[in-house]
Image: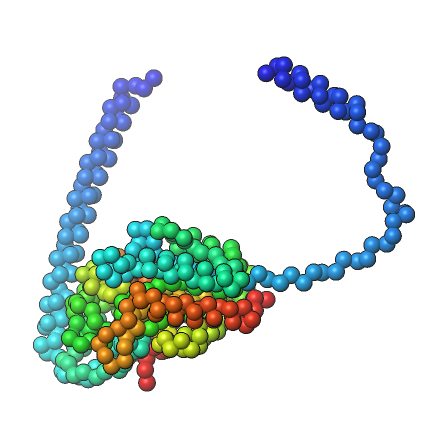
Length: 241
Length: 206
């Protein structure tokens, strides 16, 4: 220990002796004038947050003994992330495995990303088609610091526009859409345009049969519509001032 | 060095604290039992007495429809008590009977899900007007509630809209489950917040 310390001191002293005592600063009077710096136009990144609802012990809706909402939303989130990534859209997910993620952690992930769109994915056995929900919070003006529980209120108008965009895209794929407003965590804490997408079985008109949630063709139609809507939203979205 | 007197005093105080704790716990248990007995017997007796002397009235129920996410206005005739608290409870009972009926547009297999409805003035310091209804649901009903954003939201909105349609003084509604605050109804709709009667306007089909 002592030997190594002595060796280090010796090396340091040798280096100090070898260093040239010259100044490296240039003569400022001989340099050409530097043009004034211009403010660079930084484009905000287009990031989409996908929040697969539930996970871990929170199973969500129980469709059958083996089919749980938490698994369905996770599978759909993974496929949607791949579809969006193939269109060059940066995606952040709140969970990639079957783990419990707190509502606060989901909100933190979305808000740190400063996302252009936050999509919360759910599934239900009732109703038909896709249910699109935006927050029922009353719109408020945008401020730099937003209350955590009601952060979404500053984005209420943008969320409605995003919901309308998704609704139009789903309409093009002939998937029935129900629009609504609700009070839902963590969506109410999201500081980004946010929509809850709830997938329900596809009722077949006057017949009693319905396309199940697990139908790959049905899921693909919803995936295509969401991908198209979020690709279009890239052009329509404007960050808050 | 602790004197013998101090040790005796400490022991006596410790003993007194333990005895007081036991007495307090026992008194709390007795009070809790009394409250539960009163809650189980009094409202039903009051409600049945009130209903036996009530006049038949037309009531408006805002019934949820899962297929299009709307609330549909339905009129029913039923003997209604005069007391607003009892009226509110009867309204909730009739609404849940609609949901428990066969071929319901919003099926929930439990017609006795509301234990009590309490009406209280909205605090003036919040600038509120009217009354707040506190709807105490029971855990059996919550278990029977289909899970999902739409079904849960429609259940809450239909209750709020039905209360407001028949008792317009109700402007705010809060939900409890077995007397306790719960995070969500069945995993989705937020039960920690106070709902406004105006929240239901977008869902009601004209």
